[in-house]
Image (cartoon, rainbow over all chains, first blue to last red; front, side, top):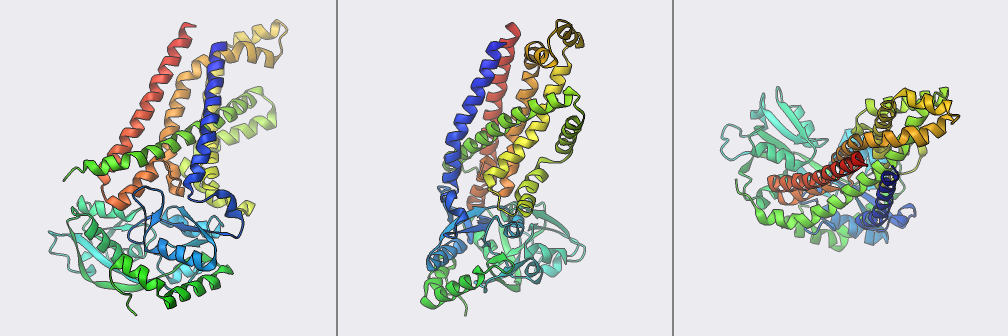
Length: 265
Length: 218
């Protein structure tokens, strides 16, 4: 019995030692030191980094990369604040803003009336639209109008999901990430994916085995904005920094880097 | 379909780092859960009325609601109550250990109740107190019997800890998801993730088997 107690004791000690080191590891993983999060020197920025080319984890898994990430870092530099990126599910971002777990959400989030009821948005920083993605061998679907009574995959909580829900008779499958929705299409589990056009375009260029194509016209031109908790005083500063970046050419540079063209004015 | 080995190979170090976090969450949660579980099971068996009911409510609530919902409660609902943000690490560990505590409490209760009632009666008639008998007669025997279910709980938590990926906590599953978002190589990455989980659970199962054999001899 004593032996057993000793083993159990040893296990517990081992666990606490492991977690002791592990705790540091986890902190290092948060990309910046956690202590400063309470002070105003850091802005905690929430995102869903499975949304290339706007946000995704880089090859080493150390940092987050993409247009949104570059933009928020540039804004942080303007405001002289440290940017700490917090990664979470897309549908978790607005609750996290309102519970104070994050200060700002930048996640390719379209500014919509519904979302405006829950949070405030910055000025638009990107103009996007929705597209329909189908398999290459599918010649019957030419636009979203052909999707009635078909199956559509979407990413949960996105404007693409809202759009798909309005297609008469269509069965909508919602996935946590857009990659899962793309895979469902590839596996022929659905007839189409309704998603933000730049994301679909990036997928088609990056995955040689995608076997898909975009059809129809770009729908519902919509603007991406940064979301903040309602009545957050930081909003004005954020907008000022964004305006400054647009004026000094920094914004155009980032746009060119990620989308290969100059922004449409 | 082409199988891309190089993507898989590149991903392994990242995934292993995630596996380290998974192990960390599991160790901490089951460790704290063990402490919670012992206390709660003794309280429930002690017969002290208000405490006993509290213990029952705790176990019923935790076992009757999904871990995923408990994680959401700690991470999203708790800040509204305490008016302060909750760290993802803290949320992950507290949700998992409170969850584990309820299961461990049940494991302990089963173990203690499996010891013949006559032993408690014998201890008490020898003049020992309830707690003395519990500590030096009942618990030592109960410990031996609960090794296998405790091992199961550990393996279950190792796998269930993947649920904390929903709050963006970068353990093994979330790492996999993040790599797929960049590479679109879902088959390769999920296969690698599965293999890493399998190696970990297999190692724990062997270790528990070893312990079991040792204490059956002793």
